[in-house]
Amino acid sequence: MKNQILIWTIAASISTLLISNPARAQLIAPAKKAARVEISQGPEIESAKANEVIIRWTSNNPGGSDEHFGVVHYGKSATDLSQTAKSHIRLNQGHIETVFRVRVEGLEAHKTYYYKVDSQQADGTSDGVTSPVNKFATP
Image (tube, rainbow, N blue to C red; front, side, top):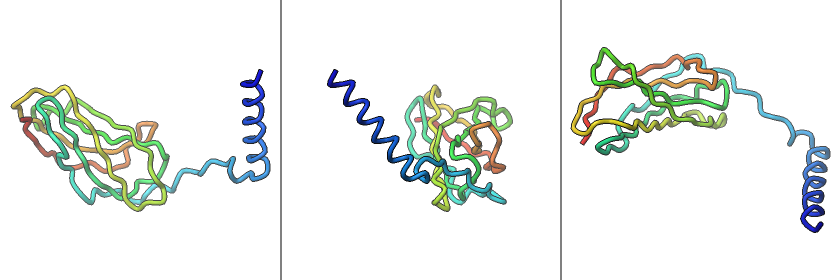
């Protein structure tokens, strides 16, 4: 019974806060999509292990939906980047830049891999920026 009273009290408090200040109940609209998204730093290998790497890059804030993904297209040939790794990120619309980090797992030790990076909105729409093809070797 005490737990139920506590739950009702918390629910009533939250309801009162939202009703007394409707601005708190509103969601922030997605930011206007950037006219041109550009990579300002990287992409580069942040860390490397025998079977995984973390690739990092920075771009201007792409705008659009808050929910985004950093995407790495990779493979063992510069002409076959058919494998994909993604990492979720939530944009901070107040920042002018966004840092993306993507963990690429399941790699083979002592191999060379080629890759390019991209970023996407939650619906899979590309932000329109793709890096040139780069390469790394696993330790």
